[in-house]
Length: 468
Ligand SMILES: Nc1ncnc2c1ncn2[C@@H]1O[C@H](COP(=O)(O)OP(=O)(O)OP(=O)(O)O)[C@@H](O)[C@H]1O
Ligand SMILES: [Mg+2]
Image 1 (cartoon, rainbow, N blue to C red):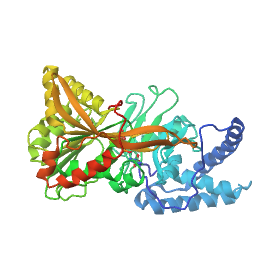
Image 2 (cartoon, rainbow, N blue to C red):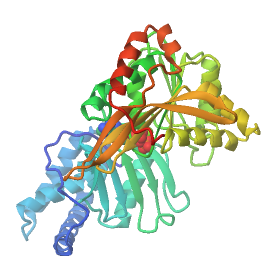
Image 3 (tube, helix red, strand yellow):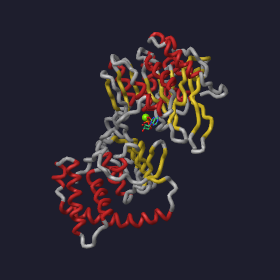
Image 4 (spheres, rainbow, N blue to C red):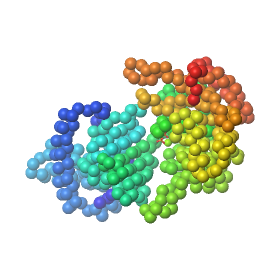
């Protein structure tokens, strides 16, 4: 049937599935198991009847919304004619679920339609978790069985011309709406296929939003604006889902419209507002295992494309070397993200990536290259209460013997926790009034703005015993 014709972000007024926290009672689960049995029985019966009467060719030809309506109409007719009537509320549930299976992504559809969900994590057919407002909770959504889940996974990855099965059990894909998907199937995943979806946020957060969410103070945001405007080479470092890409996207907002920007990403997530932007995306190998284009290929190639700035979505391997070279050779203001838990760790990881790419340079030379290329590391963090913060703005000052020297200009310090479990903390300054990049800032007429921002940041003093 019309597989692969999924629709996303539908505005249907369907009730969102209830979400409960991880600790649900066993009795409740037992009850829902029984009603689930009846539900799946009826749905299967309906599916069989539909196969006999639906014209699959016709469904392929009409638009997805029309196909949904048509299947829903036929399904209702079948259920109404049934000798043993089906309760009204269940009719709607069965019809919705069947339509989602036929023209969408089955039980995932209502979750995909919700804008408040940032991540969907499916651990086998019966354990679906979602992240809402920074908190992970278990969803009531379930798949009939492992096969049902694997079918939905197949349909998702087939949209990008890939397949997932025992012989190729790991696959990355992207939904039509830009959401990032990873599937790992049995036998590697022991309890059924595992599907992870990072939902694409249509309305990207701005730096002003980050200030509203208390992820950064207004003067901290101003410091970031000046850093970006002054064409500092910058790395955003942070853990998984800590807000790296979001922050990178915000910072690109300060790039001049006259500059030629080339972005390199694994899955295009950045949304640059400038006119002169070239977007490049890596490509996985095809079914025959050929044609893979990795990040390093893209970064190397974009150096031949006369970029003013290079933006790398995530630096993970040998491309670190090419990005450092670009930063060193006139592509000031280039940016990238690195997966690390502190600015110092980010610098260490970059060093390891360069070594891992097969460059047999002495460690001191690699570090010199790093210190000479990267001006600032901005650290993002997801706190245990779900809030995301910018936890440090750290400047790379230079080398002392063979060690890279850094200094924090701002850092987030945790003072405690309130009675609701929310973290109490503050963005504090370290007393530095004239950072190393201040000569750059003055070249870009930002001297006064920098002095004002730092004075405000330093009005909240950091604990000098801590450092990044
Ligand atoms: N400061 C913030 N406050 C609230 N939500 C945020 C903040 N920053 C990012 N988010 C949201 O958190 C989710 C993850 O953000 P993002 O994709 O930027 O993280 P990431 O660190 O790049 O993740 P990954 O490691 O998977 O690439 C997104 O839905 C985003 O909208
Ligand atoms: Mg990211």
